[in-house]
Length: 88
Image 1 (cartoon, rainbow, N blue to C red):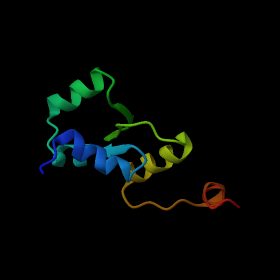
Image 2 (image 1 turned 90 degrees about the horizontal axis):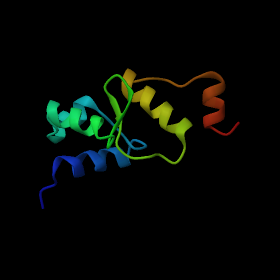
Image 3 (image 1 turned 30 degrees about the horizontal axis):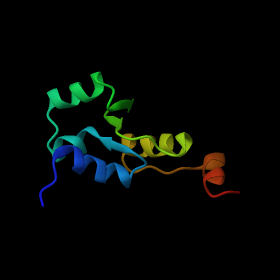
């Protein structure tokens, strides 16, 4: 069964705390106009440049960390943030 672009984005988002990147959305088949429509209709929300929330995440703090990771590419979480993430 072939998935439509929204379903593909939702699958990606389910592994990324409700987020997709612009590149992922475009690869899934979302056009520039389609992206603008999703933002304008508030189905999607811009979190950072090129990073969009397509679903609500359970923990906004964890979603913000994931957004930062997606925005920067390969990133490292350090210091107090890493300690909190590991429950220290």
